[in-house]
Length: 117
Image (tube, rainbow, N blue to C red; front, side):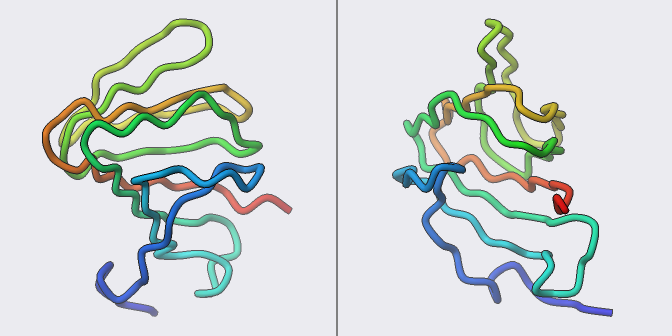
């Protein structure tokens, strides 16, 4: 068993899959292969107010749970969802999506992804 507080994990600047840095977005890898998780990873994201994460995609699906703040999540097909505290989203593998923090506070969420083999 492992127990920690999210503050025990260093927040690092987020990058896209191709290594491009994303300004004003920070990630903490809470649970991953380094902590012994073989099947999934749990990440904690903080997106500063006014920040926009442009359209991008990932090989793995995403399960997102909003802890605080308000964001607009959208995809390349034109679908948009406003999500705030307590909402959750599912983003399928390879779906191009973007995130805009449209609130006045940090948009904070957990994002779970499978470990790809």
